[in-house]
Length: 377
Image (cartoon, rainbow, N blue to C red; front, side):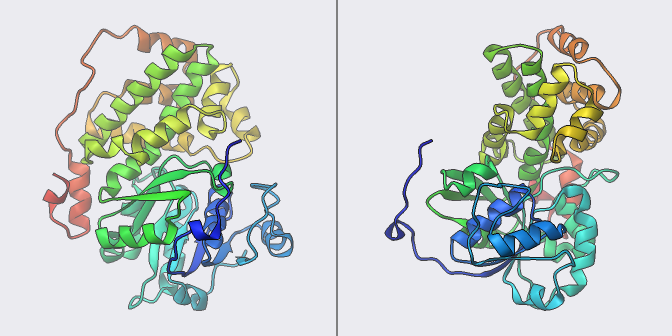
């Protein structure tokens, strides 16, 4: 393994903050580690008392990143929700909890926040909410109001937790409807080994982060069926085209899908056995049953639940998304992996690029936020 030995003189001086990280899972733990390692004062909240006690006593997480020693300036808290006193004292709150539980968490935390002095809110979850098909931006608007949603910040990109805690070079997209808040968030995280690039298309970033997990399942199936490099490269590239088409029809910028949050995260997730979603697809391709795979996976593969939301969005938009539809048929309709693969390969030749007109969902969300619809034109 190649790593740099960073000297203290290599690290630029930066403003430090008091930060609360919500979620002590794999990604929340690694980001809390990075922030503490960057000299911030970090409180990591989790629901598991064993994890909390271990982090405070031994600076180790017994369930995630087990071999890593966390910084001493990281304090674990919980399992009770963070107090109003703490939430009003911190300058940054980082949400690293699954999308399916975000609405409830925000509803519970909102009364504890100081409306006149809101901390910087950063979200790293990826997915589409079941039942509503809402992206995180809309969940924030529903629970905290348009004013909060307009300044919420999102971080996404090719970022495996294990490599982040090893200080291996990682680059991410930091995005918000407010360029000022995107820049603030990037300054909180930016280091030579964790580079941040800002953007202003949170809808595109969110769709990229959610949909790439669906396509990672598809690419895993290709590998599980025994196909080699040509087929895997084709699946990833056609997945990128399909993601871009869905995103454009939703209202996102097609350029967002060429960023770290788009093609960067897609290629990482689709090309590594360390990806949980890729692993689900691979095992399905090998003939294992979905229920057994999920029982034995050991962590959440958000691509499975996201596939339901993706299918609903595709149906609403009226766009053709053959790969995503095929994944849905396999996961939720009992379709055979081999038969779906054959059906995809037997489709007639067609145009490689097919971008529809900007769709209604993004405009509808802008209206909810009190912004001009033209923001997403």
